[in-house]
Image (tube, rainbow, N blue to C red):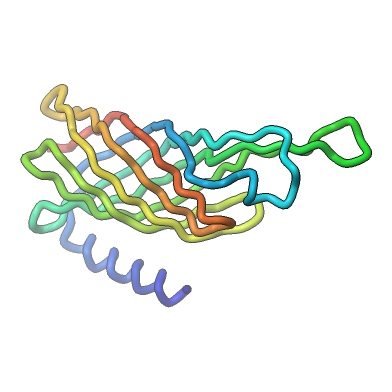
Length: 177
């Protein structure tokens, strides 16, 4: 696993040596996490939901040929669960969140439509696991420098039961000219 990430970091460094700083932005979204919460945990749950939320900041560099390489840092809310503690009148509960860092490649078509794919790390309260990012969307230009990206984000996270966050997202992006 370490050799894969070392190779990825090496590739990114080589790619960035010819890249130009392009944009910064913020993205937020909401959706669902594809996971069977009831069967993922070992407890008889009294309440749970799989609502997903995401908020991330990102930077992008333009590579030769017009593709972008970027990095995101942010958080994902995956699901919530609670169960009664046997023999007591109280409940255990937790909302599963991750803090994550993702490196991705993005390509725009006609300066409007985009696709995005990448890999990263998700840090849970009890460990770190790898994850992927797959996305597509439309960039709504509001000025020469500002864009509102509207898109679909799918993030498989290779932890317990492999939750897959599926979010509709939007945000703001500032492009340096």
